[in-house]
Image 1 (spheres, rainbow, N blue to C red):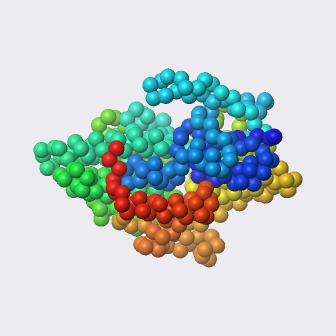
Image 2 (tube, helix red, strand yellow; image 1 turned 90 degrees about the horizontal axis):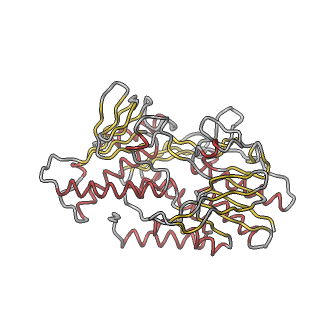
Length: 430
């Protein structure tokens, strides 16, 4: 039986293995294997909410192993360290516990078809001190690490005898992650008062967003950026545009002009790139963002047996632009890659991938949601905000749940989440 190995269980990877298992795995046409470094999947656009503590991975995440049992595919916990292209196998690092004790030795997995869906990591652009002093939000583990630090800081400020003492958070990068995190932190600071920290509130929180470009949300229309900036400044969040960071220290960020923006917690969300590992292997053609170049069918340019989807996929469009690293891109790629792999097994011609931009949304906690709708939904870009934008934002998450679980279980999962949000705590305290 042929083996299909998918490395990376993000939005694209998890949807892909679910589709392949339904059409090929359950029918005995192929063995499907998912590999991921984490035990739990959380939709990446929600990682800032994990970091802030307003959602819990146990109720909002998907356990890979349980999902694999339900959908009849295999799950291997581990980190891919090497690709043996000639012999069609990947090598996984030894698996260790929290104390460094080895649980499993180095492992190899053979494949007939390999799909790389490894996502992206934060790009610090070689800025001194960032790796040592900043928190990142490109994985579940890092989001949880920031959340623990945030709770410690909230407790410190709550116990402070001086009312003028404030928690300073500085976020480099005015994209969707940075702006959404800033709004959630404002919300969490007020929530803390009801959860054992009566002296804490948003009045004792100072958040700064530092954007090197001329405006925040540079990838979105200017009207959306302007609406988001107004909502943030109305909350008292400082938005610094045209501010280039040259260094990060344990005390804060230093700008190109030599000014220091002091902070207790430093967050870096200024850009993304595919993992350096993909370049270091010396196998693939890659672009400046480390993305693996692919053909029109999402196959790597060097090997037709290796497909690439999601943030680590470098797909150049006819106008010369690259498909952006967004959740909607990963979803669309997963759909096309699944059809093409199934087409190979069923001797059906493959389908060319075309990216469709349906617009973008920025959810600023409970305070505001702004965005635009595009594509087949409207004849041109349409600005939306308020309840309508919030409804569309929620629907995107719901669509992901349906893609992963199917309509029935997806609906039950969403209902369970609503019940949990209603009866459970609004702030995760551990």
